[in-house]
Image 1: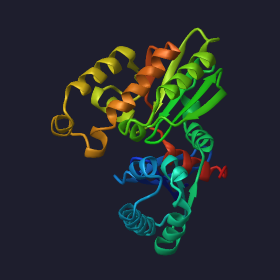
Image 2 (image 1 turned 60 degrees about the horizontal axis):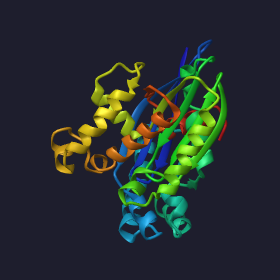
Image 3 (image 1 turned 60 degrees about the vertical axis):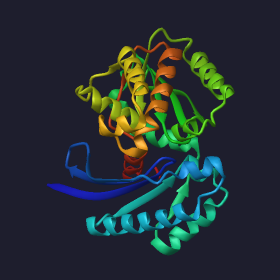
Length: 296
């Protein structure tokens, strides 16, 4: 006997907003299966507002309301039984965030919770990472967003330490990440990985997923430091227009992908990692699983 339940997750990031609708397939005596039913990504760059002027602009508030109304209708059509909407870095820093949340609840009937970097990292890390983590190895999990990057160290299947830094792609795009932040990241990574002989990276976020797709590799195969480094040089050699026309990148991906690649490269360099695995996980997947298992 098979039972299918539907859950939805809304991830309001600094570079884009996503709605993930998941089918959870329940079968007696088997682990539940989480299958993507629908994924909608809307390129509303809230970080451009929040990090430069400190508030979400009236234009982007209107776009958010429209997007949330659409998300609500889609969830209704899919007959979703439960959803959660989480906002991250950009909304954390916008001083009008509370008003925006209240307006969206009133106009689109969607309740948004603004979460901190620690909770964000915990939700992402609670996804399918245990399938990837070999108990006798050490991994540095790096999730690059528009406003922040979360680093989590795992060893022997357990989480050792985690830290969120205000170094995201939209901030980098606006030259808002000072050398002192890079120094802090380098120090944190080197200090936390010093006791381990070998560290492997696990990358999460839209940009590393795109880099992985471009590599043409099979899902469980890692990308090498050499490959990431050569892609960084290649992307830098192209203009913004060429990255859209020749590589088929979205306009809101073509400018931030270089900055994301730099973060992954530095994380590999400072941890001594030679390889990076790219599982198909993110905040929205984590929200769905945490909801299903009653963790949130």
